[in-house]
Length: 116
Image (cartoon, rainbow, N blue to C red; front, side, top):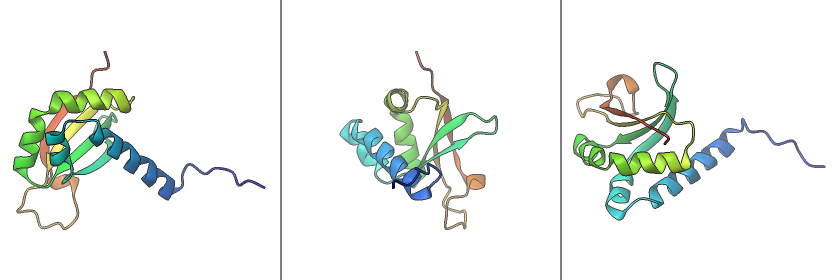
């Protein structure tokens, strides 16, 4: 007897998002891929409830370089992630004491995704 699929299973969700992020990164040029290798990723609603794809860089310089590739990144989001309304390229300032990323202390830029 087959078990019923449970789509709230955390490991299944993690596997899906890991595969999606890998596919997202592999579709970009090598220079962008190199920058993204040292980033963290996440999906969350913004303060207005719009679905946002977060790219969290390890340092400000990496975030600045990623902003230069915003057009490519947004184009890739449009191809792979319908329903994502915004892309946020962020970094956590080095003077914050948190070991884990804390959205309260992140800085960055938010870009709207236009599906046209």
